[in-house]
Image (cartoon, rainbow, N blue to C red):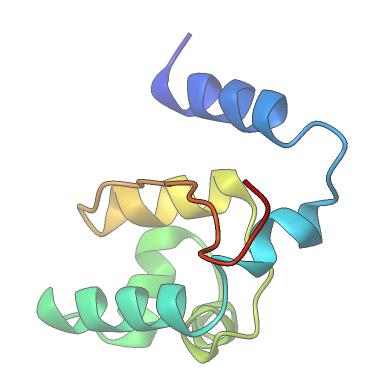
Length: 99
């Protein structure tokens, strides 16, 4: 079993009973978009070049970088792999949430 399969299996166990939207709402949007855009620029890649590298359209990369994309875990793992980033998820309790 490769790293991606292990990651997907872990996420399936952790998110059992939750919708994909519920799980990703806390981590998608501006933060992920910012990381993708920043890292792509650090690597000196234009959107079109990165899109070709990822095997997607430039419009898809634009969607990723605008924060308007609902990512799958597999997509995030692939993006991180291509951008030489580590995909790291942490779960913490809200300060005012139930104990």
